[in-house]
Amino acid sequence: MVDFDGTVVDEDVSEEILRAFAPREWWDIDLEFQRAEIGSRECLMRQAALLHGTQEDMLAYAVSHHRLDPTFGPFVSWAHGSGITVAVASDGFGFYVEAMLRAGRVDGVAVHTNRVSIRVGRRPAFEFPEGHPVCPTCVTC
Image (cartoon, rainbow, N blue to C red; front, top):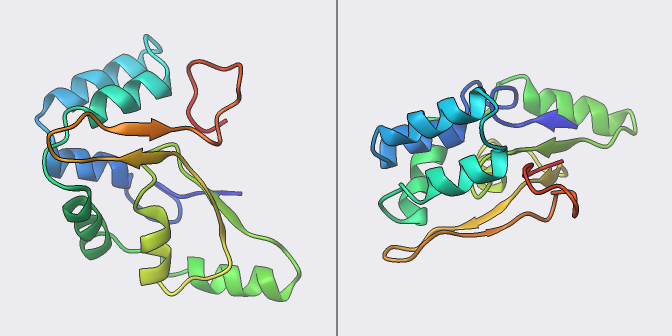
């Protein structure tokens, strides 16, 4: 399992989307999370509520402005050739992970992330398929 944000991609893509599509208040919420005052689930949901624009615009931004680490594709090829399964995980918005892997021409990687649907004029909708069923604070356990 490889962490997506900050490893497969140098930046935390969710934070970069927040920088581009949300008012500065997203950072105050992030500080609450860093101080362990809130869990990652609450942090993600509150930050997503600040986003403006369409999910399609955010996805296009992520793919056009952020690239996979150039060593990730060769690593995946090596791993597959050695019989090793590669998976990536993201505790962020997640909707950009598969598209960024495709853009980087990386195939055959399992993706474990949240499902976030952002629609203009509506509150973001969330599913946490990778969260533990009894954990109310984490997003991807």
